[in-house]
Image 1 (cartoon, helix red, strand yellow):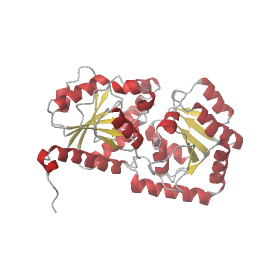
Image 2 (tube, helix red, strand yellow):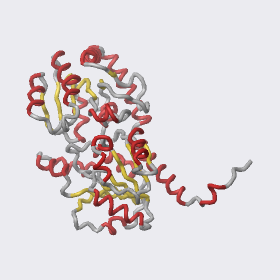
Image 3 (tube, helix red, strand yellow):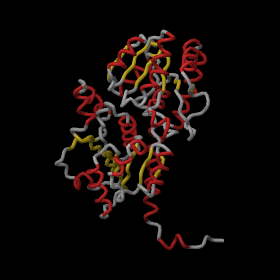
Length: 376
């Protein structure tokens, strides 16, 4: 198949965790024999901020990591008919502009033969529904939602008639254990501050426990206000700024544990959706301690991570992992096996192909077939 993927950013992951997963899926589709063309806006906010943050070298490194993926930056002069010519599958991520979403949808509605899917990986459905209402999805064949609860929201609000649950996963070609890297820190945290969506949670489950236990570690991410930087320093941790996703495996390998703190809207209103860092950390062989969230879709099995309910439990969990090497090894081993068996980008690429095949098959089923009596 010729797969044309419209992402907000492929080359940049600056405040754009979706890039990690979307890169991995593109890689796996290519390895499965499909032609992959990725379009990203040349002036997208993630690319602009990455460049402003001194990340031009990082953007180049990413493209070298995916040499077989055809990545094209576009501006308003994009010839959309040319871009879509010969496409079998078109995937449009929800961080694209409503205009480009509408234009692609109109071509499908007018009879273009490709399968067209909209991919939602954000909490705007519950925190800013009017932003999603701007998208014209009538021409789309379906929606890929990164959690079952998000799928139900789309169906309940009538935004789409055909919605599939498509969880994120780890790009294990990139995220993998690095046993030759020496563990020099107690804890590493990789995540962005955002819009105060988890300020209280980061204080309770990361900064205060680390300060109380007098641990060493580094916080990586962007959009941290001065007050947060001061709290990190006061806890005895270093602030490392933006860490491009392809460098995260080394950061995980240098630490003995990490913490998973989902943003408030996910934990409160979109249960069952972890951050992608949970998949990636497990794939890298570092034990994970998580603040409260509900794994209502049973993505993870018991023993693959530690779940705590308050700051005191977080301290106890970190102490147990750091003081008991056998316990830590058993946890990381169980987590790694789970990722390899169920949660890789290869798994998700195959799921996507199955979804596309199902949509295509349904197009060619004669209407009368639905009315026929089953054979006795």
